[in-house]
Image (cartoon, rainbow, N blue to C red):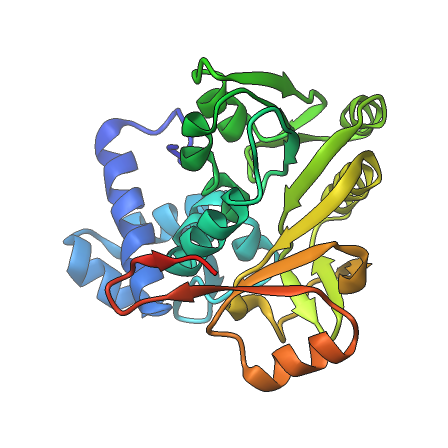
Length: 272
C-alpha cells in the first residue's frame, strides 16, 4: 500500500518512499546525510521530512530524523509492516494451524494478524470478520471465504475502521475465534497507544468465544499509553522463541497459556 499522499507526483513520491526505507534501515539519519544520499538540496529534504513526519512515517529530531518508535511513528502501517516480519510470519503460521474449515473467525487490523491471510485460502470454507481494509480487500477475493467487513470511521494510519459504528457492528456478532495483536506487553498486561483502537479491540474480545493474542518477542518490555487487558484474558498467547526465557517463566507462573513459534536460521517456519 502506498502510504504517501496521493497529491505527490511520481518523482517526489518515489524519493520520499526511498527516504523512508533508508531511514528505517538505519534508525537515525542526519540531514546532511540525506542531502548527499538523495543528491538534493537541504530545503527539499526539509520539505520531504515535514511531509513524512505529518504522515507519521518518520520522526524529526534535532539535526536529523529517526524511526525509533514513539506513539506516532510506531502506529504507522509502513513502520509496523517492516518490523519483526520474520517473527510475525512464524507466529501467523502457528496461529493459522488453529483454524479449521467452517470456522467463523475475527481478524483485527494488526500487521501480525495480516500475515495469517495467505494461509486462509487453502483452508476451505471460512467466515472472516474484520475491521481491516487491507484484510477485507485480500480475503474478499478468495472464493472459499465469506467476508463480513466492519464499517465505521476509516483511519488511514492503521488502514482500518474504528469508532462507534464499528463497535456496534461487532456487538451484533458472535465469532468462534478472535486473532489479534497489540503494540506492547509490559509485565503481564497488553497495551496499545490509540484509545479508539483499544475500544474496538475490547468489542472484538467480547464478541469471541476464544481469544488468541499474537505478539512477537520484541514487544515484551515495551510501553504504550492505554492498557488493553491482562494476558490471562486471552485463551492463548502466541509469540516466538526469541522471548527471554525468564519472561516466559513469569508469564507461565501468572497462568498465561503460551505457545512459541520456532524460527530456523533459514527463516523457515517450524510450527510447534
